[in-house]
Image (cartoon, rainbow, N blue to C red; front, side):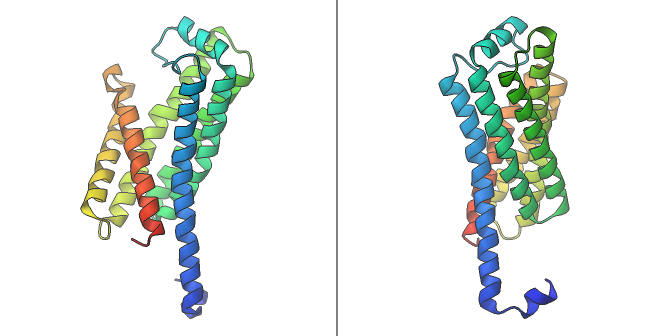
Length: 215
């Protein structure tokens, strides 16, 4: 604690703590809302499901041609979601969590920007296929394991004060997310990406809410 904080009136210290906890809540919930909102918009407004790089090039090209506005909207939502994720990582309180969280936020922003490019510009052929793959790589295979490291470090930092079920959720989420690295080697591990991603988001929201409540 700094010298100023040490000699500050208790009420001032309390207000700063409340303000910081409020920022953690807004960051954690904001990240979840923006990310999941982008996915839901893609599902509700699109004329199909956002394609996987494992789908045929023709199917992906057909989807992007018919859903440019939807892809653009999802990309913008995910670029915006990277901002509160970076804020949450900065508030977690230890260096590994901050490093992993900020890198995860950068990967998510890169994925979102690539979707913005796909939606805004008329790419076709090999260029479209490459951008589509890079979007998946940045927003999935890179972002999710880094999100897992953020959750693992945050869970460890809070293990002494958090309830056991929260710690268990964090360990499971981190394990699934980090294990999704296996998806680089085999398509059979692709399921670990959404499992790790959404359990990690759940831990982030719960942790943000508990921080705001002072628990």
